Image 1 (cartoon, rainbow, N blue to C red):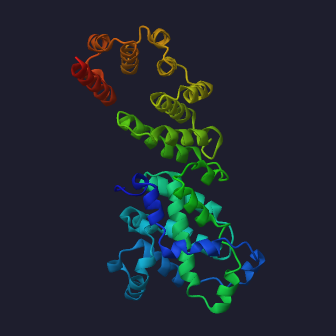
Image 2 (cartoon, helix red, strand yellow; image 1 turned 135 degrees about the vertical axis):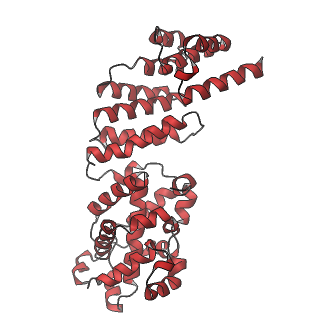
Length: 359
């Protein structure tokens, strides 16, 4: 996916809600007359399909009558659908069916939680994105289709709908959470059915791999992002995670917290990894000791270990004891560059540059 929604963050999330969606706030906030849902004459299949086409297909590929409507509504189509990969996902038959059935439910003020859950998992797998963003995109698609259909209803139907709510103001509430910089994504999914183990693996493993590749880069949001995911695995909708995935995530979360000097929080996740069945946690404990300033204690846990991670942690402990040259020398004597990971090489290079700058 091109640089877009998650990277741009809050600004993009707000920009994604164009006037048509922003206009939902007053409509979605109403909490009355749910029993009137049965009086609504549901939209025909062509009307719903036309609305879905507007957000999923390029104007040049739309039928002529739909294209003409697109020109009129172009300014009301949320920017989130400008992403080509999002449009391709919406073109899938299974996704269109989910959007269509959810739009009908939204119009009738009924829940579509199951459809949202399935769609979010599909989105996460297809675009390698997080579940919360898949839910957000799906909700905006459903709201757009529902409002488009509602706009073509007669006055009597609209009068009934004006007394209904779309899923307890779900879109409005999600917009506000995003506007608050997504401080607790877990709230968005706290009541969702537990995800299946294979889907959980497909979500978590790319996150861990990406963190491993990019951990030498400064990213203040990384610990909290991993922390939210770990909490969902520990006691939330991702608790079906298998043992190896669970252990990897807990250890990765603990390491990220240690690097940000948050050892008290990291300790919990090391113990969680132990409880999940992790056998060798000596490097993790050593990293924790380094973060707490217990360098001699850290070296005890790393004694006689020659794997890349342990060598780098040993050098870090020596370095922080006030002997950076000794730490660099230990690396040179103990491990060859061909046995070092990309992260280790980058770290070694930065220490070497620092030593030369100070020297």
